[in-house]
Amino acid sequence: MLHVTDEITIEDWELTEQFMRASGPGGQNVNKVSSAVELRFEAARSPNLPEPVKRRLQRLAGRRWTKDGAVVIQVDTTRHQARNREIARERLAELIQKATVVPKRRIKTRPTKGSVERRIKAKKVRGEVKKMRGSVGRGD
Image (cartoon, rainbow, N blue to C red; front, top):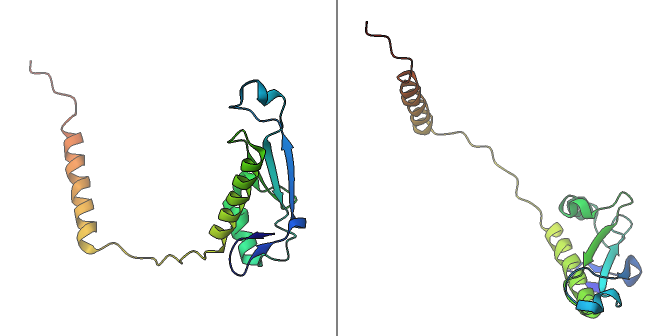
């Protein structure tokens, strides 16, 4: 069982781990030992996640969200299978924690009168500079 927050815990049946050979550090050992881990969490079918959290998780996961609604996290950071497993679980918990945070609604604001005037004045000055770059008449 994976504890994410006080309200959200993920059961073991929702997680699937698959081990494979890793690329990266490990020397000749990398060709023999399956130390990389692929952690798969069936988020869309999870009864422990509220619907708004699932939607935010899908947006945060990006490419890691599959068509069938699973979050796939691959880790081959270390040479140790157990440590890679821990890192994958930590990353999943971190991702779900981020999804639990409700984003603040943006309040539309208007630019101040002074800032609009300064912007227009700067545009006019810039236009004058560009106008002065015109072709020079021939002095015959």
